[in-house]
Length: 610
Image (cartoon, rainbow, N blue to C red; front, top):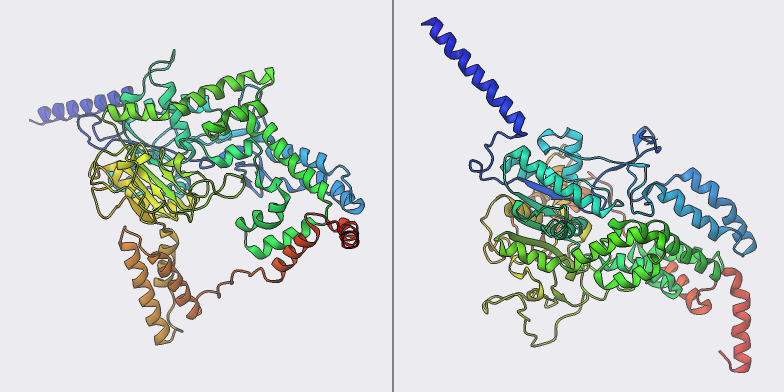
């Protein structure tokens, strides 16, 4: 009997070893059983610009450190010492003599100092001074530090809890890299995920610039390009999150030098106020007058010229963010030299992929691939380019790009009275796709029935909106939601929220030491905590409820002496009056030009000429 049991145990052990070896041989790492046994399809996140760590190296594979830490060189590396050594002397000489004594040339070199590691060669290949941190495995195999980095970029912890970290992958890429290489790597990554999980298909979550990368995948891996297989059969579901499907007009304006700050009237009244608090902006406007008008003009134009010539125009990944309607003008500016024909060939390929985005998405739909989109709106684009308020946007990308064609008006404007939705892509007469504020007609977007809009949400704070993350997890993990009308808890048009900050404030309040609080202070804190928790308990954001809860929590904590009084936003006051008076009195002239300008004004009074 014992011998029989021993033989049986030995046989079981042998079979176990054989099964483990077989699993290793076919590359499967998950225990779910793969296709046919596991209903949870693995998800690959294709992150946005700057959401992958790219380490600075010395060109020989050795990391460069700053204060003992590796340097993440996106978007550049600020070597303060090198900058001071190059700029200080010409800046002082230019100030002293009120004439450009090497300052513009120094700015030219400054672009090299800041961006040398992110410049590409004449074939669009990235430099030897960078090393991408890749994750050729699921989050289950990531280190805790890697997981922390990934979850900070895109907080999908609840997806991992449902599906398992072995079903979540993060495709890293260099935002200053080569688009063709990135797309080729993405296809191989998809094949690797299928092999590791045993699944035949994957879900894809392209975010921001990841939407542009996905354009390339759908075009080049559609079965019609020699040597490139068809990826469509490998896709189960797509959940776009603020995708750059037609680039960003900010990039389009930058690469065509259609820049607001080159208009010095706007530079001295409007440009800086959108980027920082007004008091600081106004004092900078005054300080800029330390240099003559023509020097400011020369320096700013040189920055725009050299940043484009040396960095952006040679980077095919950056070209993927150039909207199609800007492309021909941009090519004429930067890619006419024969030596750059290799780059142009690649950018032409991507321009085709971008132009075919609707056709390629439609092919997915025809193959019964469910495609969802989550977008932000009613947050004006940052005023870098002159097109910043031509249409609605999320601060970084214009709405028609993220929404696959939705029609909209600039922030603050409304559709005309009696406007009827176009119904370009909606055939159901009972569907209403006009935004509550009457600024967006979603029916011109090709995914109008599956696109969710978040009013007032800033692009770069999308991941902090817990409603968006909950919605994304639901869409990726299950098939419960089929369109924007499925669940009233996730309506088509929703509101902005910073759930991360609100939750942090609630945690601070709950863990607060109440030993020195008055009963009134403690009661106020309890009431504020409940207000915050009530706000977070709903997935429908109305009337700024979450922001009101956050403001009350901060006020209650301040009242209880548990945090410093909030620094009030600086009012411009005197600085605004001074800057505007200088602009009205002296135009864009520098201080040294004021005497001559004053003489001109006096002469005009006597002669009647202004």
